[in-house]
Image (cartoon, rainbow, N blue to C red; front, side, top):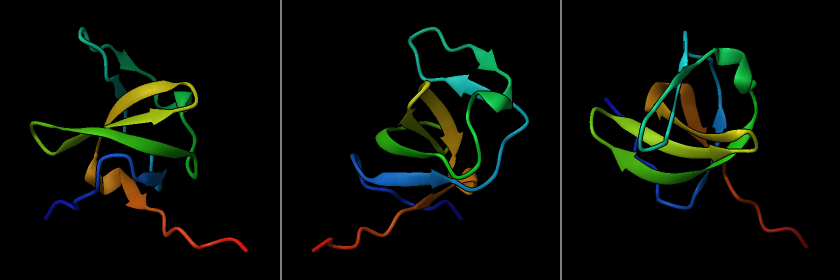
Length: 77
């Protein structure tokens, strides 16, 4: 079962995959230590195969939904 995320919503990395793939026209495999568990990103788009394009501080990567979770937005007063 794949989780669904809205485009533009914030997500958090909850586990590291064995490698990460960049979300570029010519994707490259990168070591998983490019991003850290707990790092937050923004959903850019949905890709075939259950992958999500997510923008983190160090770039955009393709991640399966099992590695990310939605961040509940609480209104700050």
